[in-house]
Length: 129
Image 1 (tube, rainbow, N blue to C red):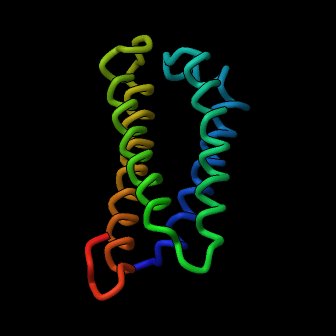
Image 2: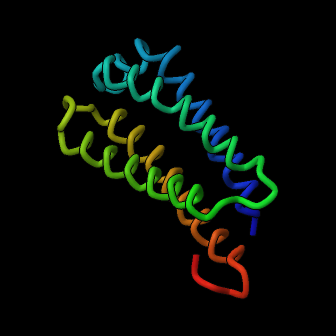
């Protein structure tokens, strides 16, 4: 099982990559997915400070449980927002768009689950974090 610090760094890296993809390739993604350009742009912008927060948290010798919970709950919020996108809250994605949203939400869900497990494993004396 990777450490919480490693998972946070991986999460930060995926946020940077997705953020850059959404910012640089937003026009192409809009055409391919049917997702609104504004949604992709602002999601990309939002991911960069989130990545910075995750990376900063991972630099501490001991990851603060509260900071880890902020990341875990933020990932849950991202998944919920992704489902709202699929429900048509911001346009109507096509089949590729639906797949794009589902795949990225699944990656975030896996990271969230592993981060939660790693947080629990890092709690002193097996206490629940």
